[in-house]
Length: 328
Ligand SMILES: [Zn+2]
Image 1 (cartoon, protein in one colour):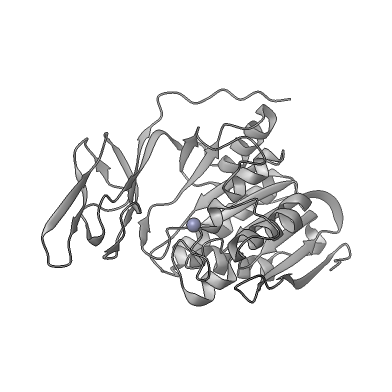
Image 2 (cartoon, rainbow, N blue to C red; image 1 turned 180 degrees about the vertical axis):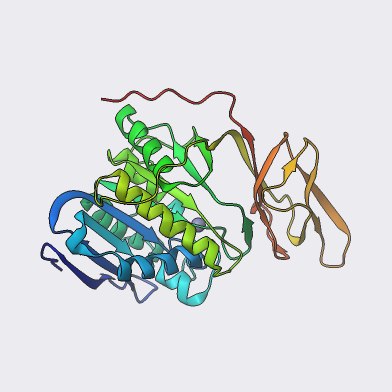
């Protein structure tokens, strides 16, 4: 697939059949600017029940004029087609794997592994900058935020901070725990960073909603990044005074049963505040999950099914210091 300068083309990446599955497709578009510049990859649908990112990229495809663009935008419209069509949360329907935990993937693995491999080779490897756009999964009620990963090469970390500010979400988690070995990466944005490409994971929306505010926030974020990378002359300014979040913890269920959320996203909680209760299938209380420290709730699971080990909520505390960045 080739897009001449100043044109937009769309196509489909084929992930061939493997043992135990029929393969899948990954719909994408290339918006090739009239003049050269960065190659920005925007990925939606890594989790197939996360709809605002997918819908926002449909709009970007229509609205972005290649004739007034410098550089190239690659849109991955639905990265995880099996999950999207089967409406699965977290895991692919054929192999029970979380696509955003198996990147960079393998050529001969299960379907999620092979989707990850296709995304790594055909999208990440061709891009200069990568934004993996998520929201709360189909069961997660979430306030918007992004992750700034600080464990890669200094120049990549500095440029990734700029991407987070340009995208404009006003809460940014400082992530100090992502692997920095290209062979050991797990997440899509993490995989890009270990390969020397500035990257960002953004979260806007959730709970299977398709609300205008969550979609528009992503469109605004993309426009801010295009301006920051000098791919377009106009666009919104970076967020001026974000809330930087340091210590953070995904709280996990110790039991399988029914989950009852006790907080809302964006809520400030004290240490010990009950985040959710889990009961057995006859109504007996099994567990109260409490905030391990004072902070803000970024998401809470808001539908009843819960399996031992799965996330229940995510709490983060304001950062006491922001890591220094070294610019080349
Ligand atoms: Zn996700």
